[in-house]
Amino acid sequence: MYSVAVVEDETLTRKAITLSLREAGYTVHEASDALACRALLRQTRLDVIVLDLGLPGIDGMSFARELRSGSDVGLIIVTRQSTPEARIAALDIGADDYLVKPVHYGELAARIRSVMRRSNRERGRRARLGQWIVDLEARTVCKGAENANLTRGEFDILVRLVDANTKIVTRQELMSAISRSPLESDLRSVDALVSRLRRKLDAPEGDSLIATAPGFGYRLAAAPEEP
Ligand code: CA
Image 1 (cartoon, helix red, strand yellow):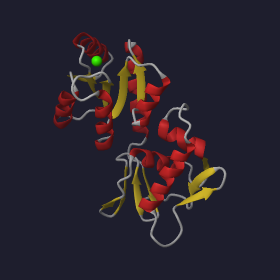
Image 2: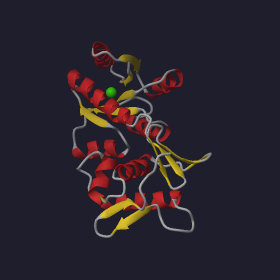
Image 3: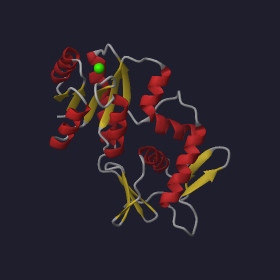
Image 4: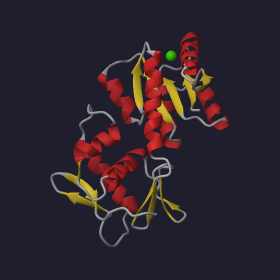
């Protein structure tokens, strides 16, 4: 059974969301602020965190950033703000989804299922790229004991390239892999992520693992192999 934490300071809203998710079959933990959620993360395994942005103490956006830098828990942001800018900001820090209050409980349960389906697809998947082993489930790229320490954006780009085998992936496609939103339109961030990936993964001498298709996008220089 999936384990969900509801981080929300308004007690009635938190109880209502908790009850509806329990009825939908999830194991639900409640937290009234970021500190309580941190404590939960130390005690138990969480699959998805439903995070209200307007929290006392550590605000929701800062906490979302903290979650993203330290774990790969599914993250659904719930907020009163409905502007495109607010949505972009949430998706940019790596939220898996975004819901505007008042929350429709059936919709929230469906979004959680969708986030879990996405992560289940990667279960047990691994690929070899040159000397690196890409673990799609653990979201790590390692060479022996050395971890390339990719950021979420870098990893998402790499996965999209691995999925394409050696076919060209356009910069637009790579962008949608990192932002999960067609609203953002900064193609240069794709180029920046690819050059960071090259710095982290390429041997100092020799060709890059990632080839440039000028004017189109990028592709893997060689097909990924079985690890
Ligand atoms: Ca609130």
